[in-house]
Length: 190
Image 1 (tube, rainbow, N blue to C red):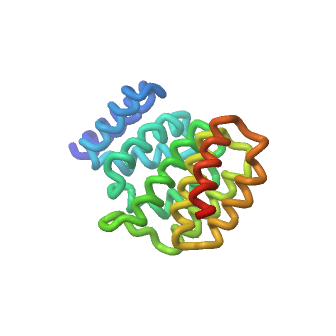
Image 2: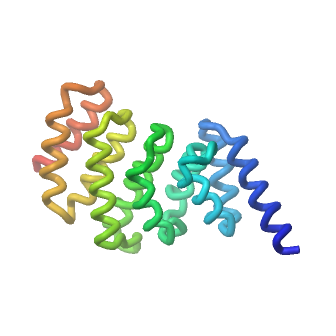
């Protein structure tokens, strides 16, 4: 009986992910479903992190919202996230993944926030720096910059690297990227 129930729940989860879209309302419905059914979180994350799964991008879209609403439920999956992060290739998965990095880096500096291990911090820094120098979309680069800024509060060298990279890239990007860069450079130059 229990095996049948687990199969039914996983089938329902896969169906919900498959039917979801990039629209905010759809992503929120799926993230709320996961938050109401935290026993499904492991299966959900497995789909998001499996780049060969046709629905991994859709799962990442809603995983971002799960992390935004209740980041602490994501903590048990940090090792796996740090392993998957540099392997992501699809822009539609990279953007929410870098936003999750931003949530993690902000929470890491708050009282009562989550505490990243030194290894997690270093793996995130490495992956985010790589994203920043690669040919990524603006949103992913901006989230990476902001996350690196937060992580650089603990590691001064990160701010130095970040400043060099964004100053070199400044002229090669859109007005949106340049605006984000100007704001960050003001903070870095204080």
